[in-house]
Length: 482
Image (cartoon, rainbow, N blue to C red; front, side, top):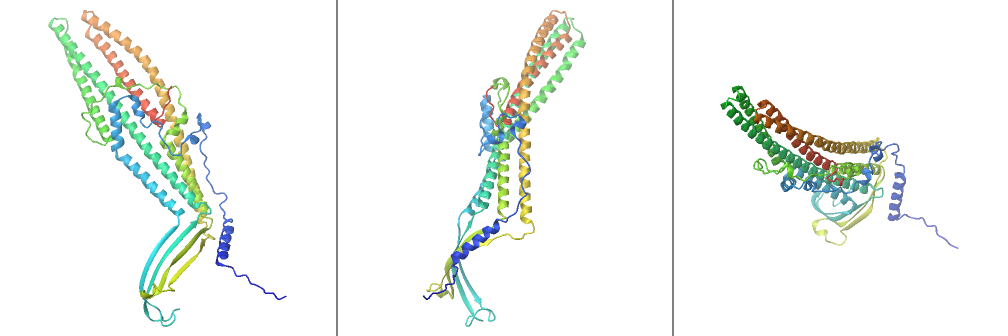
């Protein structure tokens, strides 16, 4: 029986498949062993946390109570914070950084889609007489025309593009959290400055009352001198105390003006708050001091969430660096028209097309890829240790403010007892002076003791509000009920 021997001729599709299979086989030889991050994220148990901060952090960080300052019940404070959040340039800078990070994400995401380009070229050229062109092209001048569409698609077989997108998304989340951290910091600065202004106003009222009382005492000494009951020395002593009180009152006016200037700058309206009518410390709604705060609330802190997002982005960058060890496989195709002579481009036979894979594989790069991967691993270590340091500092901030609030409560209780005693002694001294049983010095000493206690009461009230504002900031604007 006759027979024929066929010699198999590989088709273009078979050759492409063979090239891809070869590239995949060579990619399996990629060697990045021994390269990786060394740092480890701090375990919650090591910090005494009730629940893991790292696992509690939301993918897109949100502040638990975005209007936490409203808890203090002051409409003027609410208005100032809202003005600051709308007008301060630092927030617009943070928002611009979010937009820039989003653009990077869109750019990276575009690599997952096919790339299609169109081109039309027309060139008049002289063809070399000593090159590959045969007569009559050789040595002649002709026009060449080319119109074609080129398409390409990269196969993300090793996850490089996916990892790059994850890294870009991590940077977006970090930028969003940074913007929220800027809002939280700005709101805290406005709140604390407002409480400082209320403290100064309270001290001003106390200074005016003290001045009025000293003026009344001066009038009493003058009347006693006229009656021969006091000496000129007592009169001079009474007069000498008034300039000191007026100087103190003037220093308080300066502090109040400077604090208004600070508030004006924070709210984006410089020199626009000199006539601000602030409330009083007594009008602020007090916040109960918690005995303990679940420290897993630290997950609500935007700066902690930003640090966490940067760790995740750095880990994705490591995956991108690893993918560089593997082949880069693209499918390229083109179709169009090409001719010599403009008039020939629309004629039959001017069609051209092509399709095939493009494979690039690193074979020898002098250690560049390993060095690049080591750099990305080091970036992860930096991000993790930055996160660890931030969490430790956040735990300390919360603990400090709880400690301060608890101490202020105890100090206030003692101060109230001391004030009651000083008030009683002042009443007794005033009665004895009016009856001529003691001199002016006893009255002044008793009054100074009462004044010192009132100042301490104002300072403790202001410190309480300041510590509460700092505690709210330390927990990202969220503190549970005690």
